[in-house]
Amino acid sequence: MNFEYPTYLIGLWALLPLILLFVLDYRWRIGRFLRLGHIVSLHRTLGLFPKYVLIVRYAIRLLVLTALVFVLARPKGGITDSPRTKTRTQLVFCLDASRSMLAEDLQPNRLSRAKQAISAVLKRLKGDQVALIVFAGSAHIQLPMTNDYGAATMFLDAVSTDYPSVQGTSISAALKEAIKTLPEQSEAEPALILMSDGEDHEGDLPPVLNELKRRGIRVFAMSIGSQVAAPIPNNGSYLTDAQGKLVFTRPNEDMLARIATETNGLFVKGNDPSTALNKVMAEIDRLKKSTSLSAETSIGREELFLPFLWFAFALLCLDLVFVSQWEKWLRKWSIFG
Image 1 (cartoon, helix red, strand yellow):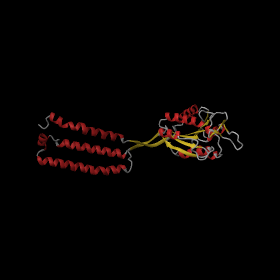
Image 2 (cartoon, one colour):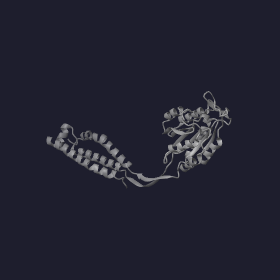
Image 3 (tube, one colour):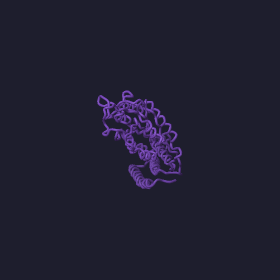
Image 4 (spheres, helix red, strand yellow):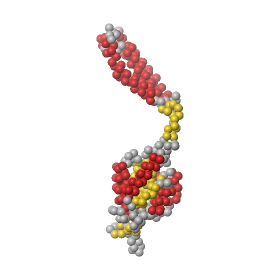
């Protein structure tokens, strides 16, 4: 039997003064009683415990302390291998907040429909952690990793196209921020949900995709919007180019599909964001069950402190319930005459 060090030695050293304290307390109490007369006579007149009952009670309490010392020492048995599974997920939502997300090919617009879909998922989550990255020409962490879904909903509601300081669409910036949000080592399965129209104006994807593959982070990409080209609202009118022509936007499904494929994730068309996100969540749940690290095992030693804990509990019950009735039983049996 092995003990964790130094708790075992500390516990033993703590037990010695306790034993000495009990012995001195016992001798002091008995000494006081014996000054008044014989212990049996004192029992008859004062209703005190007889001497040997007091000794038994002190012995029980010392055994309780000894058992608790062994509990603190945490004795361990042989080496055990147990499967380690990931039962939780760390979800990072990367939400595009560029001006093209105001296109009204989805009612009321792409951004609002994407936010509604995320909000519906947050209401169903249990135990999983979530983070929110908002991006346009730059990206920032709107909400760090948390399991406070109420706070997540509040931060989600605050997302708008007015907040990003740099306009445009930089998917690579969003993915970089998502990588920073996810810890290197975690008991939870990481999943990155990218919701964008895919109109990337910054070409820095290959290094980011390599880092995602190295970390084993899957990207589940959703193209927000229909395949019908739509104008971009701009201050009560529509966005135009330098020649005064309307600027139209259409989801870039090829880019989003490439990101999902290279990271072993999933691409879903988001002409109905709620339905698309439900498909993504179903796939994440399926992958979480199938890749639950059943092949990996955690190596440790078998914990043996539980019998000592139950032993201490039983002795406490004996002291509180059984020993307290001894005086009545002794009187009933007329042991003291």
